[in-house]
Length: 376
Ligand SMILES: Nc1ncnc2c1ncn2[C@@H]1O[C@H](COP(=O)(O)OP(=O)(O)O)[C@@H](O)[C@H]1O
Ligand SMILES: [Mg+2]
Image (cartoon, rainbow, N blue to C red; front, side, top):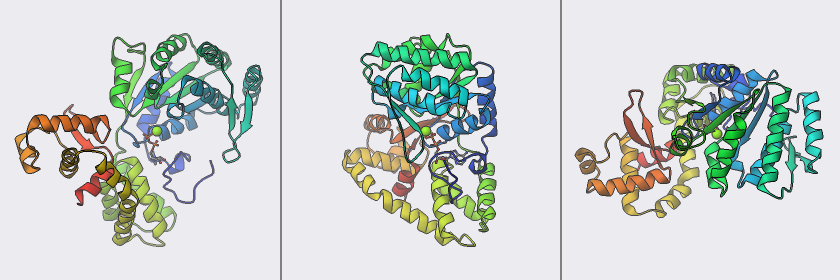
């Protein structure tokens, strides 16, 4: 990817210059991989898991072959197999000898090979006839990589395999294959906390206790503050600490939202950031999302919407059935709130977080939606 003009990209990874901190997380991941431990990376959506994986790859490369795939892009095991082979080919493309080996090996499957004209990446399409054939090809790709040297494979949004019919069988099979590899390490990552913890921490499941869990949180406020100031200054744009704090506060420290707002403000400011530019950017963001929020409102009952709004206004809710909370937002009885919460959690509109001391609380998952509801 070529470097963007705006230093606050809202998609992808553009190298350490445009990446804020995460040094400890990077070092922990590298240390685990180097010492033969597979990792499960948990975090809410848009905190920066995928970008962190690419950041780690940046430092492991070229000693390690680094293969990344987003499991969400595959609708079935067959799709996954093609995506995996595509990712292997792209992952080793800068290692000439290995690349030639992989390419030669792939040709035996009679694939349709193409190049994406926009990204320059290779695409592999093989018309597999059975699950067994797919398993054989993935297994031999693992073995090929294992014989060539250190490799790390990131399976991002891994819990998504359970949206396929064959998900459970693939999970067991993958587990048994992975344990035989000597030089290949895995990073499993995911946003759906319940699904992922169930997969990796339930004694009944094949991956039980086989990986090191790692949870990433928000980027440290102070680090982000310095980073934002530096990015603006490097482009000759002045920004004051109160304005940076206003951005971080609105975005609730959520990486994507911080980036999104900074990206807008950066494009508006020629020499100096003014509060009005922040306000305008926020209004633009609301305007763009408004229609989907109206559609969201129409997709649920009035009461469910009322509970969602109450949680948004409250910000962090520790006890949704507490008398004060019910009374303040006129929510009626505790059991009704619990039913509504269950619904909102299942639709991932509300998320269950843990404080450092282990205390549980609820918050609206999408911070932009939360801010929009607070304003109404
Ligand atoms: N440390 C960081 N510094 C700057 N931008 C980041 C950082 N981590 C993530 N981002 C940006 O934030 C957005 C969300 O990150 P992403 O990795 O896609 O989140 P996740 O995978 O957890 O959903 C992306 O646009 C990414 O470029
Ligand atoms: Mg991601």
